Image 1 (cartoon, rainbow, N blue to C red):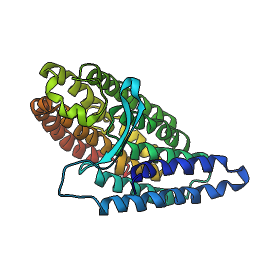
Image 2: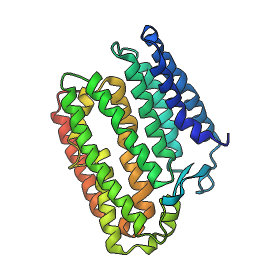
Image 3: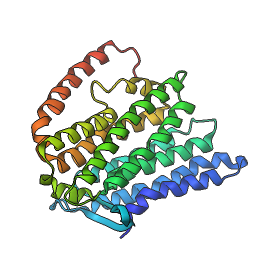
Amino acid sequence: MSHALTLITFVPIAGMVLILALPDSMKNASKWIAVAATIPQLLIAGYLYENFDTTTSAVQFAEKASWMPAYHISYFVGVDGISISMILLTALIMFISVFASFGINRAEKGYYAMLLMLDTGMMGVFVSLDFFLFYIFWEVMLLPMYFLIGIWGGPRREYAAIKFFLYTLLGSVLILLAMLGLYYYGATPTFDLTELAANSSHYSIGFQRIVWIALFIGFAIKIPAFPFHTWLPDAHVEAPTAISVILAGVLLKMGTYGILRVNFAVLPAASYQLAWLFLGVIGTINIVYGAMCAMAQTDYK
């Protein structure tokens, strides 16, 4: 399967297009189209996981093609030990979430179309090895999640959706600025994460610290880590059950994945200097503060 990663990423988009093309008289078929779109994704994920070589740290199942050569942007996807388990997890949770969504009884076409678009965005983040492509998929997740909470959520869904949108938008702006900084001040202009990691010593330590902090805040909002966490309780409580499952099971893992994929790999010197504060101290606060919030919470969800 030479194009396995492309298929696993874009099969849900094909399902989304088919759902949107359905006449209103066949809207009940949208749930089964969503099931049909997530089954091959789960099978491909199982194939990738089963055939992944754990004896090497090299990128596997890679696909690379020139996309915007004038800006050194390529369609570059691949998996390594960091991402392979997340791909299987995403495929499994999305498959389960479709069945968990069968209780949705209004605007079903829109719901399942947004669900499959969210699926593509999440999977694209985990397979991308070009920072620009990574960022595109990161942003693709924002729109469907906003609508899934804002339209199909609970009584305070509009407030929760707008709060989620604003927090995530702030993080996206910081990640964008950091990405452009790495591009323009690198040894060579590139968005290739493997090249950026290989040439990390080119960046001065002062530059690395600034970019590391910007990236950390952007990814910490998605985790979400203290003190960037306040959007999450509202989003979790107001979101439909299946979306809460996706939030907890996949979306909140993406912040940590981004730190591992970008901060640690591309900016190792800054990671060594700043990890004790931003990961050790803030992580400890999260554990204690989270436990205290859980003790005081009355909403189980």
